[in-house]
Length: 148
Image 1 (cartoon, rainbow, N blue to C red):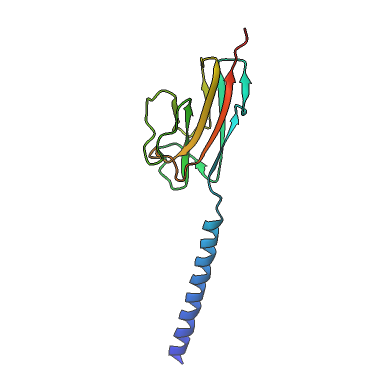
Image 2 (cartoon, helix red, strand yellow; image 1 turned 90 degrees about the vertical axis):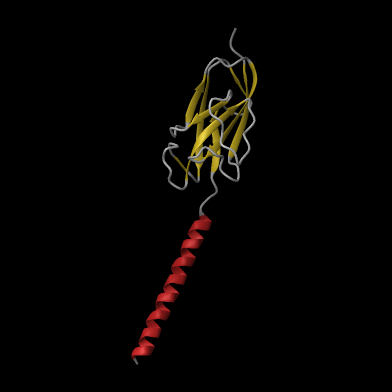
């Protein structure tokens, strides 16, 4: 009797673990893929100033400072009139046209932009400054046309 009781308990434990594991796997699969949105400037905006405010939003990932090494976190990097670095490379520091928002901020202001067309790419990068894979990016084009 004792052996059959032990087998029954072991069977219940195994079924419980399988059900819990299956539910956990479904939750993990149900997480949305990270997405990024440039909220400002609007696509194809004509900006009447050489100062351009950028506002960003991300879904499916926690935005955190780069020093926060938790899984599931990222921060924004901006590429103004600059191509995105290769997806398996660290985004370079002190490179013209690249801005690291590594303190976890979701905004940046560009000052004294030259008049004319510009392309802004925002990407999500991990705490080690490597773009998330697959690449999570948004792009807007805008024109700076200061008032005369």
